Length: 234
Image (cartoon, rainbow, N blue to C red):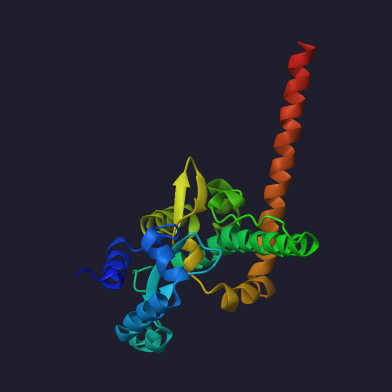
């Protein structure tokens, strides 16, 4: 007789993440008894399920009660068990702030708007909240290097760290563009970290990058318009 919870745990450990739309994942997320069973078994092994209602994937991570024993055994607190250097983790935080934070804010704003519409229209149809990386514009690698190169070890170091983060599933790199990977939305606890990022020193840097990205978009549109006018004159 098969054990669906055991199978799901093994799949999560073997594949490292599963899409939220996976049949087994969906069943666990909507069935309270199955979820309790999963949480109990993971806790017995010092693990916990990493999931967020707005995240497109789920994974497993170290239980909070085990974090000190796992990451605090060395002289310095280990950033992770993925052998990521400090500058790689710093880059991961920056990418999370640039890709996940604006996505989450848009998701929450959309859900709040739909709740208000539902109250106004008793039979309004609720649409699923979008979860994919398409909700946020990808980051241009050149812009990232220009803004953070001197802070995160230079071009060579950032390129090496981007490769490491891509291999671990945190990001996806396509044509010098950086998009959210399956694990980026699960890398940090949004409720604990978001306010620290937005209210801390990183908020200034993030706002500068967003402003620069907006300026680049406007410049690109203006340049395209000038080209069209030039072609029309010809």
